[in-house]
Length: 332
Image 1 (spheres, rainbow, N blue to C red):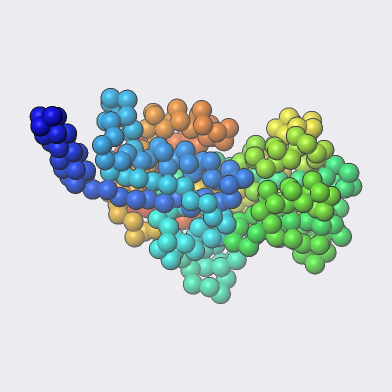
Image 2: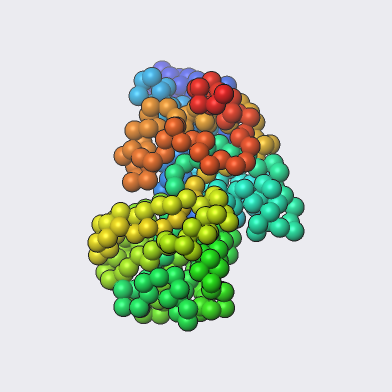
């Protein structure tokens, strides 16, 4: 018995010593609502970059994340809220739409009159975020212009979706006062739509979005196109928008391709984060194990590619990320 206790004690001491030798660090990733795309993607990336003390080494089938790092995905109100939390030091990193990140860093657009977040830095561009305008099939909405007088959720305050919804309305000649505006998360808007109290709602995110897929399985919906001259004018005025298409069959009952617009989903952080840490995080993001995790973990994970990691990034790269991209030959 004495020998067993001695052995157990020795193992415990070795474990504590190993953990002490390896600095334990925490790194939060601000995402969005749990029904959107940011949250599950954040969970995948948190798993990919984590490598807590005592984990098996990467070359022995263990985690290929950053030694000593524990990362977590945190649900939030979305892009604007994540930028504010990073600026305030309550989040180490987060996801944001490319337009929101650009405005925040430059103090323009929706940041006009507020202090620019000039410490904002990019880790990577992740994937295109499609603007979904979801309507009840029986609501008589076939274009953005048809939203006039309808009950429409523009998403909650602090979200990038709310920013873009207002731009879309303006682009089609509508003021916010022309619709019966509500400000709900996508899953809340979907519930209201099921109950017949909501005609349409905006959502910006990668497809397929869980809240929309679930809604479409029990209610006939339509995706309203954002196309034509008005969409072209929006792209001219706001060049961070790109043409996009939600393929037929992405959501049950939506049998035709739907033309729309998209912005880039980007992983952002603060210049105050240590260069060596962000370098290791970026390296872990693009290793082969993470590739397998992304490909199998979420439909949008397949779109997260090293080749497009710098596409549409309009704010400075973090020094650690920049170092990795130069070493990888992706940045000259």
